[in-house]
Amino acid sequence: MNTFAMDTDRIALAPAVRLAAVTKTYGRGPRAVRALDEVSASIPRGSFTAVMGPSGSGKSTFLHCAAGLDTPTSGTSHLGDTELTGLNETRLTQLRRSRVGFVFQAFNLVPALTVRQNIALPLRLAKQRLDPAWLEEILRRVGLTGRADHRPAELSGGQQQRVAIARALITRPDVVFGDEPTGALDTVTAKEILGLLRGCVDDTGQTVVMVTHDPVAASYADTVLYLADGRIAGRDDEPTAERVAERMTHLGAWS
Ligand SMILES: Nc1ncnc2c1ncn2[C@@H]1O[C@H](COP(=O)(O)OP(=O)(O)OP(=O)(O)O)[C@@H](O)[C@H]1O
Image (cartoon, rainbow, N blue to C red; front, side, top):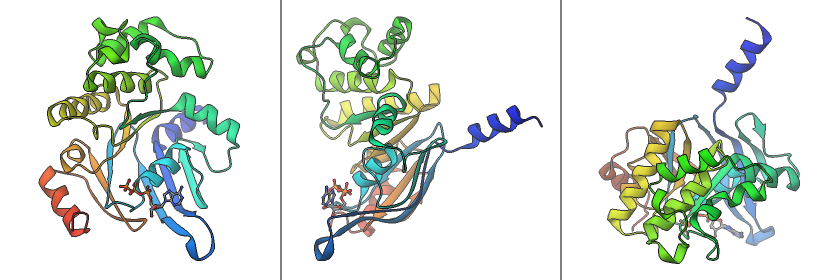
């Protein structure tokens, strides 16, 4: 086997996200909070993972350490072959702009910009060239072709979240991270958005990692990772809404 073949094999096999013994402590001394406690996790490329757990269990901290938004106190975090721990703030900013996409509960669109301009914004920030055909393709995928010149205030909540997803996809990121992406939507619209994220994984091999409180949302994922008290408390590779709800009850999420 030549070196090139070995390299491509290695890259193909590297998980999209890898956390190794990640501990994150906020504050110092007696008031210190250990939000993550030696967490290890490996998330394959082209998979849809939901992160669940009771309030305060460390879900957002997990997401932030995996996405380079926050730095672990100890342990290592990789995005593909890139070790995030050890990158300086400039490199981390570059990586966040070009290799990860974010979708939050609040859509965070710029009101003065059109749908098209909002979607293209990450490329402008990353000083990357816009491929108009790719933008049109993304608009089509999220079902907003006819709305490209509208402003966010002219769109429904579900449509605004579609813009946020399109904006997350425009840089062809390694991973799309979602923090309660359906938290502000009604049940029917939430299912449309989850179907869209599922389609990104199934149709284009996108990797999606999503924090959620909702067992129905988690059931769209391939794998659910459960956190409790800053530790991995289990996983489910065949999640259904019922099983997830039961598991969450056992973790004391709704007691
Ligand atoms: N910036 C911070 N400073 C101090 N403590 C923090 C900070 N961020 C999080 N924490 C603490 O770390 C723990 C984990 O917080 P985190 O937000 O990751 O949990 P979560 O599971 O996402 O919670 P929720 O479901 O309520 O959003 C909590 O005890 C929280 O209070």
